[in-house]
Image (cartoon, rainbow, N blue to C red; front, side):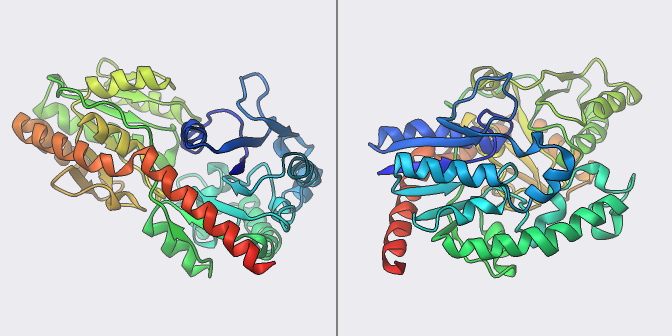
Length: 396
């Protein structure tokens, strides 16, 4: 099968691109021919895309407002690639640099949309796609917290972008989500979907670390809740004075977090290691005793937890989005109330307190992680491709 995968970025900017990159060799190893179309955003870093189009974010502001609804460059480039490559199926992964226009470029080709998170067409999650400056300082991520700029963007998406997306979805045979939570969110918007749980290349299980080291992996944004983890670390230190926190990731919220570390006088126990590659990340997982996923926003899945569990590490995660679908509370880790440093600190101490219990949880975590291997995911996605081709043939 000839597969064309389309997404916004041609390099790893987050979990979405990591998933695209990791699945690529698996599909190829199954005998499929796979190519990728992305924007040329951030040309200073290496890209793994086969085809590119000018990034929408690089367009001057007045035109960008118009092109957020219909971006001619993305539409034309996709049409050119389809004509040249003649794929059997096209799979979309992200629309931020694309606009709804690309959905109208696949009217003659079977198409699949994979929803990784908040997009312009996800009414229930739309606000979570907005940057922090669209909300008043200290205000919640709700419509009441929007600034005037935020309201203008919200109305634009609701009244212009969203109707175009909905109309373009008539050319889409299958919509894929990674969790039952996301399936419910889309169902509220009358978008039918099939749930194919997210996956990753599993790490090898490693012996439990002796030191009470807590690890966070992910983007450094306010909605990721690292600030809550820092507050929780204070109570953990009362019981475990030698406890430390490793923060693996980068993002715009890092300066705020560093200031909080100084304010809490945790400079000697919190280490920011930046965004790291998979080999180095594996070393940090091995060095940890427990991994925290303190998100405040409804994570569609939470793939970091699967990586951690594959190494044999218990996970403490917020009870948001789809995370409780892979985390078995009290068995492979603990689920806590989002935004509660008290609950998070208590759960971390509970894991660190009993090494035997921690080892038992780690073993259960590894066994659970095996259900989310990239190979199993690839087989299910190929099934979706075949169903999309059949549906397209029947429709035409």
